[in-house]
Amino acid sequence: MQIETFRILFDLVETASFSEAAERNGVTQSAVSQQIKAIEEKFGVTLVERGRKNFAVTPEGEIFLSAGKEILQIYEGIHGKLDELRNSVTGHLKIATVYSIGFHELPPYINEFKAAFPSVELEVSYRRSNQVYSDVIENRADLGLVAYPKTRKGIEIEPAWSDRLVVICPPGHRLAERKSLSLKNLDGQRFISFEPDLPTRQAIDAMFLEAGISVKEVVEFDNIETVKRGVEIENAISIVPSESVKYEVEAGVLKQVKLEGRNIRRPLGILRRRNKALTPAMREMIDILRAKMGESG
Image (cartoon, helix red, strand yellow):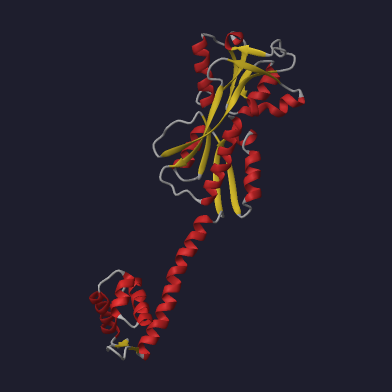
C-alpha cells in the first residue's frame, strides 16, 4: 500500500464521490474503487458504505482515516527534517592544509567561519602537499588546501586565490634595500630552498631554468618556517609567498623585495573528494575561501 492510497481515501471521504476523488488525484474512477477495495480486502473491513444517496464512512473507516492521518503527518515530516538537515550548518568539518597556507593565510577565515557557525566542530591538520591529497582521497579530510593544485584521480579542485612570490633576505644583506629584483639578479646567490618534492620548490626551479640562472643552495627545508629561519641564520635569500613573511617584515627581522618576471603568483586550490556529498559546512567554508579569491584579484 502506498502513501497515495491514503490521499485518495481522504479525498473520497471529503467529496463523497468516487469521480471527484479520481479527478483530484489524476486517476480513473475505476482505479479509486480498486484501491479502496484492495484496502478493505487486506484488512477484512468495509471502509465506506457505497450508494448513490447514502455514502458514509464506517466505524472501521474512521479508525483507518485517523491512523492514515498520523502516517501522512509522519511521512510529510520526513521532508521537513531532511530539508532542515540539508540546510543546517552543523557537524564536523575536517580541513587538511599545507603549512604555508594553514599558518599564514587560513587563520582569519577559520575565525570567520567559527564566528558564523559555532556549532560546527572544525578540525585543521597541517600536512605536506602529497599528504593533503591522500587525506582528501581517503576521506580523512573533507577539504584540502594546496599550492599549485594538480589534477589527480578521485579529486575535484575548486580554484582559490593566489599569492605573490617575493624575495626575502636579512636586513643587512646587500639586496635588502632594492625595491625590486629580476630573476637574473639572483644568479649565484646563496639560497635557502624547499625540499625537492614540494610544489613551490618545483615551481621555483622551473622559474630559474626558464631564466637561465642557478643559485648556490645552502640547505633545504620541508616547511616555510624553517626556510625563514635559515635565511636569517645563513645570511642568504629565498623565495616565499608574501603573506608568509608579513609579521617578520613588520618586525624588521626580514626584508621583502618585490620579484619581477613571469609566473610570480602562486595559485592555490581547494580539494575535495570526487562525488563526495557537499555538506552545508563544506559549502559555507568554500564560499568563505572563494571570497578571499575575489579580494586577492
